[in-house]
Image (cartoon, rainbow, N blue to C red; front, side):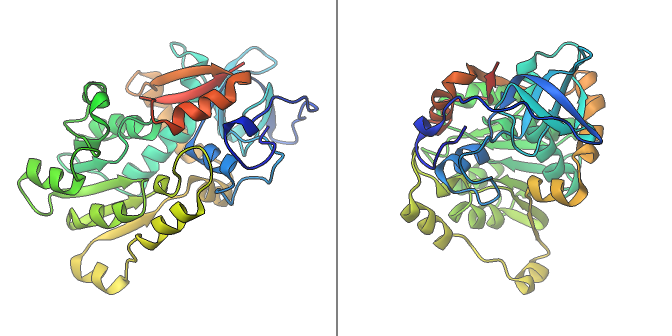
Length: 325
């Protein structure tokens, strides 16, 4: 439970009645639950779509049905729990070779990567793609998807993670702490506007820099704003500073430069369409044949939820962080 807005310690394990499924729903015995950046923002009181505390968050899970079938899926919050209720359309079989932890790392990250790169970004073979935060859950998922589509991948991460992200498929690793990523991309590519597509969840000044790297026909997919947070607690000055540095995109220059900016919020799409099945169905054969394989950075027992959130805040993870039950 998020008992109140605050640091990781506001997360507490509490007893609550088991949820009961309604029409078209299933109840799943959760074995692993994925942690997303939205969860950490909700804990800090910075995620307006989250339920007000006290509340249970968590968008994705892997576990077992009463029949014993192993499944993974997405839920409209409630994933950090022993049992979760989800719409049947948002649940799919867990691939045979996958662990529960890997299953919990799949729905949100890979749906986001697929939506950003394929559905809206329309990435093509031979195009150049920049992935911000390439060592995170979405970053690794996006790397795998981009390489499957034949793209050349630039990825930002701290230097200690470069070997790992190259192993996942990043062609050009950039240390955003040591060098301005805008200058680094131009140096590597030898061009002022070398990119066709950027996936950016950093926000603030990063959106403008990412956009400036796009050639005509390029697409910027904005799907988060990690720069609004600093450390474990909410910082309104930091959030306001980030918003003030965020570029405003006007239609006339976009037309003139023939570039596009896409805002991507998976929860909004989920609510609008009623399910994630559009993305899960596209991803399912790739998961089953081994083309996609989630990377789990670390698994924490449910009662160590505060430590898991702190691990993410300290940016230690390469891959997905999950809770296990």
